[in-house]
Length: 408
Image (cartoon, rainbow, N blue to C red; front, top):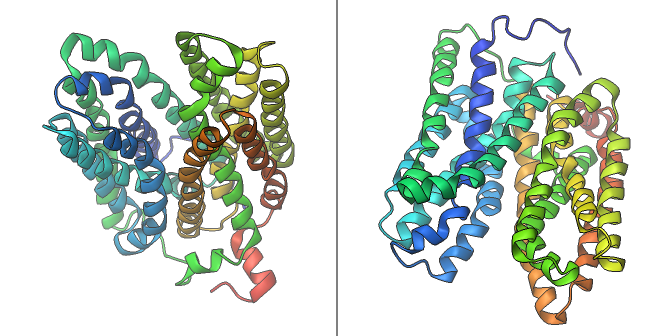
């Protein structure tokens, strides 16, 4: 499942730079909008239903294009599809920075999220193709880059909007997606000349086969748990902390930033621990234990140590980088990795899109946070059986051959 290591830069500098820039572009455009919605609303009305759709758009778009991306990749090829996705994202970011109303803002944002959904699926296969000997390291590089790109825009979006206007604040991130096109165009030209040409060793219908493989479902449920915790926390954690711990809204915002910051060490360390020490089961246990301890603390002693409960809850989504590295390690080829990445992310994000709404509905029905927190605890606990299935050191091809005969 791994290749002999060779120097990181030898013959693949463009791919290394391209993957880093792609990872940064995928998150910076997403995280730059919500902090300045009030600035935009000062220029034109933003109805509540539009704001709600903007909040739901990321997981919905990621789910839909998780399904479509493997088909696109088989038609256009890996590098060409990256160029298409980055081009669409760049144009969409330019378009939404010139939005003249709520609908044009929504349209530009949805198109951008669609392109980001394609890029999300392609990152693990790109690592599999260009860095089969460094899957852990490169997954750590791009997942850490994504974590930084998630944290940075909220820190600078409001000051830039105050100084130069919301259009500049929203549009300045287009620079990164435009620059990211350069190495991928270079790689596309090289591929078309046959210098990086790979044969597609995956049979037709691979996406449909994944529905029948336990390892694919183990990865999918693990990914869904991480996404549910993240999206639910970003939607509801500040309000929950204000009600349960007595902190003021400003302090709750700081604690939400602390929750997000926990993604940085996880993104850096988890892929290396998985690839070098095969620590999948240990990390799954740490993730689940952290999440359940956080919920227990919020239920039983919320005012005792709010920062500790937030740190523990923030450690639970370490499943995200864990699954990302396994998308490369549980496949033989980058073509199979595209299909597996699309399957895991489409189903995982579809589940994640539902839970923030369900969490809020339960709170409205009960007028307390107990039942919603028990729901979240149930979701987190589901990662134990799923993670242990995903920890089996088999590729999807091997699992298919054990159960159904030859892969091709």
